[in-house]
Image 1 (cartoon, rainbow, N blue to C red):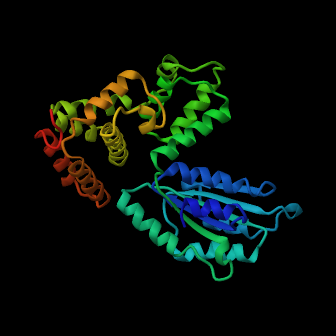
Image 2 (cartoon, rainbow, N blue to C red; image 1 turned 180 degrees about the vertical axis):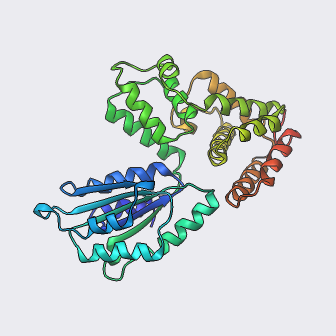
Image 3 (cartoon, rainbow, N blue to C red; image 1 turned 45 degrees about the horizontal axis):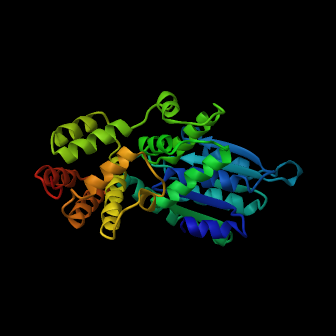
Length: 330
């Protein structure tokens, strides 16, 4: 099932066992915590990655807890379990109806290898007697609007006052990685004051906005793109994250381009919020420099597909066509 299916399920039921996996780690962690809260009286045994021991988990799930509150085994793994080990866990759970199991399965390999692993893992995460109380849930990166809504929910929960300019820097700097954004919003909330650009620049470390911005500047200037990309690869850039950043940026440009055809474009209609005037001006100018959005998105899709297969030639096709002044116009 998917995120919306899980939300509907949780409105009326509590799963006995759940396997959470997919492309967006924020949701894996978020729903692990959410489901764990549905067992408020349970005694929890956490095992993260190399700490996981099958026999210890089986013993925990096989115990009758004190006061009949139930035992919860909460696992974070980056290696799939074998079919045999998975069935051992579910068989033990079936014999102990007061207990529950949460498995968060994260990527530690290439995207294509991870996809192969989670397909095999989820295919065997079923049990003949537990039936639909056993769930396997795949998450995808949500739309830009949903991401922004989740950020606003966090800001509201923290009762935080933050300027649009500061929020824009935080969002772009972390490439909309909500785990990083939530962490830094919590840190900024401790200041007990309204947050502006200076506070974000001073306190938030490890942001990738400068490199992403510099890369886009090189791409539109059609100078040094391949050299810059080569350096980033040598530094261990997360290609999947950069692909998402490029998709998001060019989708924003397309939004400005499409609205511009109908008249005066308002940034908030496209982005869902109002960034600094200089950013709006740049987006409005650059949206007209893309000669062919169909070709551009086709190149990005080819690169994305090649990345999932572990191939490299499609990224060169994207850069080569752009640095030859196509599909970007001067």
